[in-house]
Length: 78
Image (tube, rainbow, N blue to C red; front, side, top):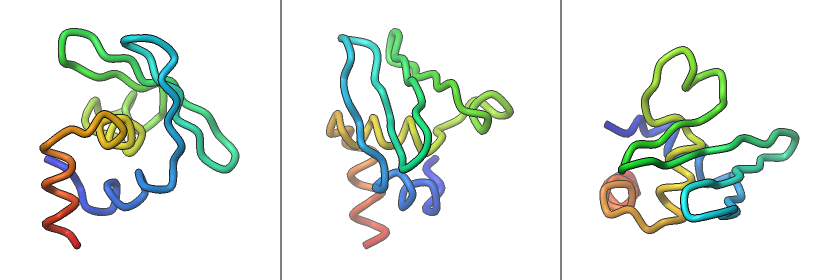
């Protein structure tokens, strides 16, 4: 499930692919690392560490990757 407020915030981030499985997600003042392994995503942000779900940084990476589920959620919220 994608929380609409996280989807909106994910649009504010820049994503840079560092390797096949690692991404750097940058906002105005912070930087986070998102890693993908076997179709699962991990983020080093506090939200993900508290509750390992789709944080806004993971959503930003999935948008960057053209993830169908994220793009569909985005279209529904437009």
